[in-house]
Length: 102
Image: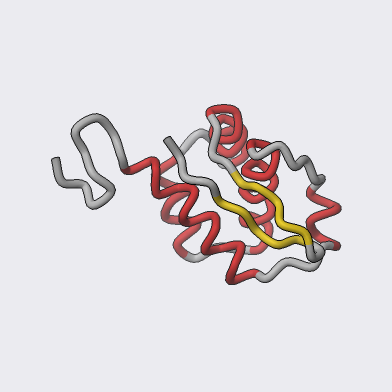
């Protein structure tokens, strides 16, 4: 289960959630390569961040278009941190802790 995450956009807290739908959307946008996505987000481009943020916002129920996000007041460092937290759950699985130990 993912932990609740939010980000402040235009002085409003918006929920982020990595749902299966959001993950599928992100996979499609980046050619279906999750490992490549992890590497790419280690050195994020603004366009990549907008795509991922858009999908996570939609997963959290706060649909904002890419165009709206481009014009929004968003702290880039906070967005990167929130995205990282959302993706931490991908490393967890049955019998595996967040540190990867079983």
